[in-house]
Length: 243
Image (cartoon, rainbow, N blue to C red; front, top):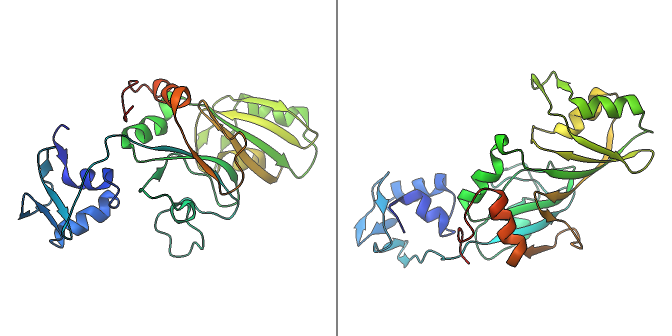
C-alpha cells in the first residue's frame, strides 16, 4: 500500500465515511503506532492503526455489489427525514457506497462498492458510461416527443441540454432509454419537458452490469468476467480492486 491519508484509509477499511473519519480523528479515537492520530496525516501498510482500541486490517480485495433498489428507498447515508436508507436496507457486512443515485420513486439496478477509484471512474461524466432504463409514461408517446428527447432536451431548471440518447419504443406508453449522463432526475425532467409524467422508472443496466433476475431488495456480488469487464470499461487495470 502506498502512502494514504488516514481518513481515506479508515473509509477503505469500512469504518465510516471520510467525513466521519475526520471526526473520529479529532476526537482522539484513532491511534497510529500507539500515538494519537493527527488530522491530515498519512499512513502506510506497515503502520498499526487502531480505532477505539481495535486494530484495523485493510481488505485486500474490494467488493462490488449489484443491488435492486426498491421504490421508496433513498440513496443517502445520512438523511434524517428518510425512512429507508439504501446503506441500511442492503445490510451488507462491509461498508459500501453507491455509484450513481436513483431517486426515491425509481427502482432498479444500483452498484455499490468500497472501491473509491471505481466510484470516481464511474461518476466522471466525460466517460459517457451507459445506463439503461425502462420508462412508462401516463399516456401514449407521440413520435415527435420521442424524437426531441433523442436529439437532446434543454432543461431550464438545470440550465443544461441533455446529450443525444438512444430511445426505443417498447409499448404505447413505454420506452427503453439509454443515457450517457446522469443529471438530477434527468429522465423525469426530459419527459416533463414534453408534457408527459413518468408513472414508473426502472434502471436495468449500468455499463455492462445488468439487473437480470434480481428481485427488489436483493443483491449479488460481481465476480469473474463481469467484474473484470466493468473495471476495464471504467479504465482501471484488471488487477485493480483485488483478484
